[in-house]
Length: 375
Image (cartoon, rainbow, N blue to C red):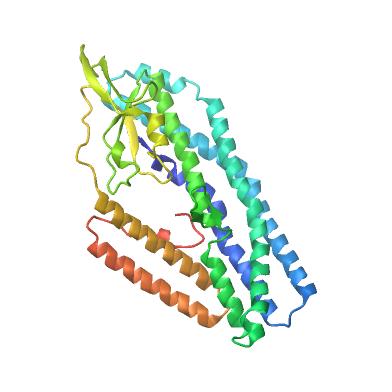
C-alpha cells in the first residue's frame, strides 16, 4: 500500500490526547479563580494566593503529561516508522513480484536508528517547549482579566465587575489558549498546535520508514497520489514522479518494471525538493508509493480548487464551533454561557447547510467540533 501521513494519524492522536483535555482544564481553573475574585472586593493578597493556586494546578497537570510524554513519543515514532516500512513491503509484494524470501530479507534489515532518535528528540523538544508558555499563560491570563476589570468599565461605572471580567475573559479566550504564533504569523490553539506537531512528527517517521524500505529494495522512484480537495501547495505535485535521491527535474532512462528493456521517465524533482515546496505539509492527505517504470499508471486532471475552498470553509466553521464551545464551558456569567451555546448551534446549522450545497463531497466529522479530544 502507498504510504501517506494518515498512517501516523491515530498514533499522533495518542500523543495529542495527553494535551487536549489540558486546554479545557486550564480554562476551567482560571474561570473558577476569576469567579471567586469577582465576588469579593479587590485584595492584592488574595490575588497573589489565587496565582499560587493556578500555578500549582497547571504544574500538576503538566507533571502528569511529562511522566508519559517521552515514552509515548518514542512508541509513536517507532510504530509509525514500522508502519511506513510495512506499507512499502506490502506494495512491493503486490506490484513487483518479489519473492517471499526477498521480502523476508527486507523485513530483517535494521531500521535507521539514528534517524528515529533524531525524530523522537525533535518532537519531544517541541512539545516540552510549550510547557513554559502554558505556565506563564495561566498566570498572565488571570492578571490581565483582573487588571481590565479594575481599570475599565468598573471604575467608570459603565458596567458591573462581572460583565467587565466576562468581556475581558472572552477576549482572551478568543486568542486561543496560550496563543502560540508560528513563523508564518498564524495563531494556534494549544490543542491544535500540539496535534499538528504530533501528526507532523509521526507522519515524517512513517514516510521515512517507507522510503528506507524502498531504498533497501533498490527502488529510487515514487509517485505522488491524487487527493481530492488538494491545497495549492500540493497541487503542482499530484501525479508526479519523484526521486528519493539525485538532482532535480530531469528525464531518465530506467529499467522497465517487469520487462527486459528500458523506458524514459520524467522526474519532477526529488522528494526533498517537493517537501520543501510544501508537499506532505502538516495534515497533508497525499501519499507516496513506489513507481514501477512502464507499469505504474499516473493520475491526470487532478486539480480540485473548488473542493479545496469548500474543505477550508468547513475547517473554519469547525474551529468556530470549538472556540464558542470553550467560551461557553469557561463562561463566568450564565447569561454569557447561553449566548455562546446559541452561537454553537447556529454554526452547526451553517455546517449542515454547507455540506448540502458544497460543490464537492464533504463529510461531517463530529469529533472535530469537540473540545478536549483529539481531532
